[in-house]
Length: 356
Image (tube, rainbow, N blue to C red; front, side, top):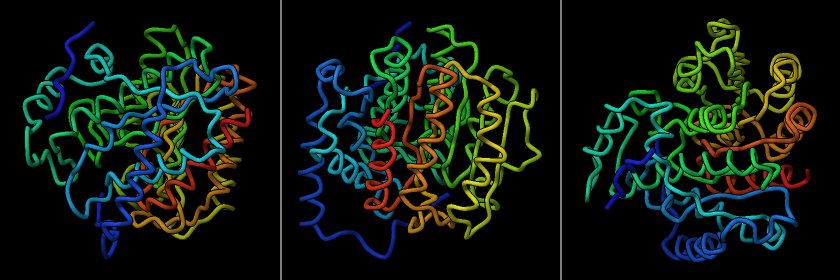
């Protein structure tokens, strides 16, 4: 049964077939071992500047067979991050987001709708690409709560940077509706928390998911204190993200890529459009919408990035963060629908973050 909302303060199938049951069981065993290693923050804070946040509840969001955002995505990530090379990461279980934090982004009517729709068993459809199972609401609350928790950690210098491994993703979610597998806009919740709770005057969001983050763009279209920068495939779902979409205060920077583009085109877009604007904006904290579905083998995209491209963009963003905001970066998992490639891409991304 999904946890209630707290009252305090486009898709195609995963592929031609599912993994064999034994393979899934082995993956789950390793993944749950990795999930069990999430400990109270601070145990290894002195040995690693990077905080890893997740929660076992994120595995309980189950939209059904063949759905791209499957629990296997995080089984693979947890398994990989259980390796000895990541033993020094500080780790934290994601708390559930408070209603207060969610209301900075989402409408009361929408939060109430999710509460009423959340099924005790079976599934409920809130649209063609938003399906709730009994565990969805709890998972979504942990995803948004994890985003709040990492902002707390980096803004109070408990960590230099942080990564949240969660699902469902968030960057398509609108203020009043779910969209594109997303229920709460985790990046927007993080940005608003940084501003409301820690006095951040300027927040920058960098999004390298293969899909444009239309929800983030819409939420901050009229906010001059938030800069949203996105590389994405176009034309592609959700149909937004043109260069001409610049926001009310020239605070939106879109750098669309074409189907078949690889690392060279990606780096050129970063060099000419994204990084100069990010540097000039001089944010107080930098949020990454870390989508890895621009990977060469991803079933939902048509770009040709590889693990080294994700490491490279991370390092480039870190250079600006080190110069402008004392290295404060929070990274939130978005897409990536081939579990094996997702895990290796996340490892490259976190490896770069931990090199700070």
